[in-house]
Length: 183
Image 1 (cartoon, one colour):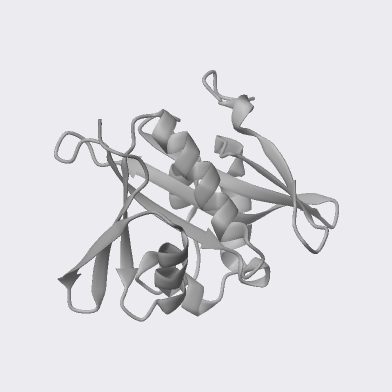
Image 2 (cartoon, helix red, strand yellow; image 1 turned 60 degrees about the vertical axis):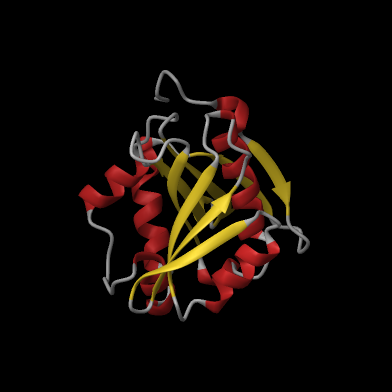
């Protein structure tokens, strides 16, 4: 059963250059097992670069927390494909508003399943999440990026959004992507 405020109007199907059909949609609480299955398909490097720690699994509690958003101050978009007759998650892109301490800012993260990287999904995820975020008052995405993550820094530069970054601890950047002009 969908949450009462589920934004069905944000569901979109796209076809990748290789012909793969991907449904981009807001996350639902019942996606928790798909998050866990997708996590198991990530390499150790992808896990570290996304979470900035090494972990082998996404616990039931973590998966449920990630799959449950309020669609206003927290949001996640997922990319879903049909694989072996089942829905499988190929990306997750999320934001959580910082709150009064930084109005209009939201912490954000994107992860794409390793076997689906370099197919344009990160760009699609960012476009969909960014469009939704701007409609809900977000002007700035804040990402915490490991200094060795050249791929995400290249992605950020290519995004076309103005950004700035600062070192917040040795080896870690805080990147502020300005997705919408401040009011």
